[in-house]
Amino acid sequence: MGEKTNNKPLTIGQLARLSAVGIETIRFYERKGLIHKPMRSASGYRLFDEKALKTIKFIRRAKALGLSLREIKELLFLPEENGCEKVNLKILRKIAELDNKIRDLERIKQLLEQLVSHCQNKIERDDCPILRSLKESEL
Image (tube, rainbow, N blue to C red; front, side, top):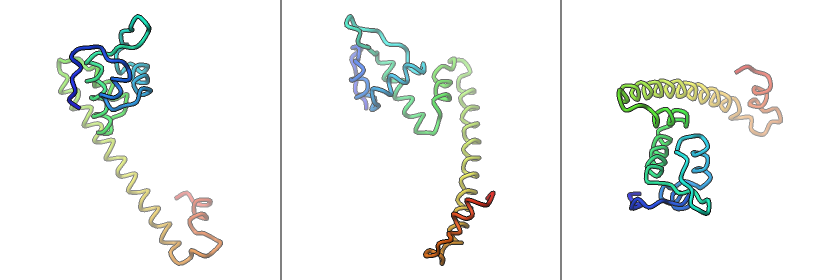
């Protein structure tokens, strides 16, 4: 991952290999404004710089932390001054969002466990309590 480009422009294939993402992903990031439009060679090929490589690696790390592309774009284009305070607030909001999702997932898990418990001794019956519950109940 620490490969250097020696400031030579990278083709999209080279950038994909060095950043461990697909070519279509790079094109998508370009369309969404996450990476800057690259230079073009005389024959029209995209030529990316070291900054594009660093940006894609940043995006991959941020996605691994659960940040959305919208949130990542906000972080990428934050002004340097007061950036830390704004980043901290964004991350605290993300933590609160994750806490809510965890609570929702725990509730869903409990409901599914209840449904399965209704079915434990009735596997061979035609009248499946899980399907009946899904068809009739509000959960």
